[in-house]
Length: 108
Length: 119
Image 1 (cartoon, chains in turn brown, yellow):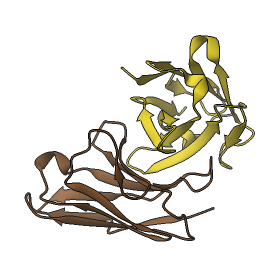
Image 2: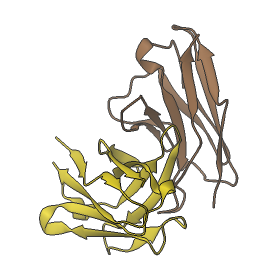
Image 3: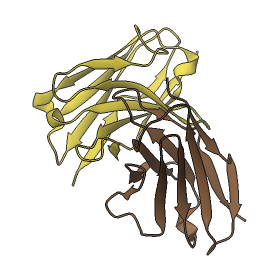
Image 4: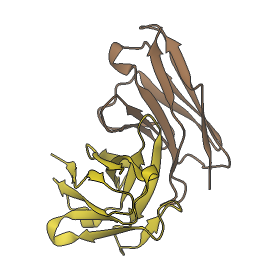
C-alpha cells in the first residue's frame, strides 16, 4: 500500500498571505495525485487532479505542483473561505486510492 | 445537476447490519466507477470499497473484507453498501464518491450518512 504523508498537520496563516502544503508518497505515483478541501460538516471537494490541474470552478489562487513522490499545494492570498482541512490522495492504481492524514489550515 | 445522495445510516448494535444507498442524478452511474469512503469522528478519510463501472468488479479495504458488500442496480442508478457484523470501529460518516472519467479522482461526493455502532 502506498502511504501518503502530509505536512504540517496544522498551518496557521494570516488572510492575504500564501499557504504551502506538502504531501509525500512512500513510492512514486507519477502525477496521479489529487487535493481535496473539506470544511466542517461538508463532504470533500476536489480541487486539483493530475497533481497540477485545477478542477472545474476552482479559483486560480489554488495551484498544485510536483511529481513522483513530492507534491505541493499552494494557495496564494488566502481568503476567509479557504480555511479548512486539505487532503492529498494518490490514485496510481484503481482502486487502491490512499489519502494523506490531512493538513488543517487555520487563521493566524 | 450532477449529484449523489446517500441514505441508510443510523444507530446499530455491534454485530448488526445496515445497508447504505447512493443514488445518482444528472448522470448515468453505470458509466463510472465509484467508491465508498468513510470518516470516523474527528479523523481523516479512509477508502472502504469500490466498484468498477465497466465490469462490476468489486474491491474492499482489508478492514471490511468479508463483512461489507458493494453492489449496484443500474435500473435505479444506485449503488449500495451492505454492512454486516458491524463493529464500534466502523462508526463514521460514509460518503459515496464517483470517479471522474477525465480526472480519475473522486470528482463528485455525496453529502454523507452517519453510521453509529454502539450498544
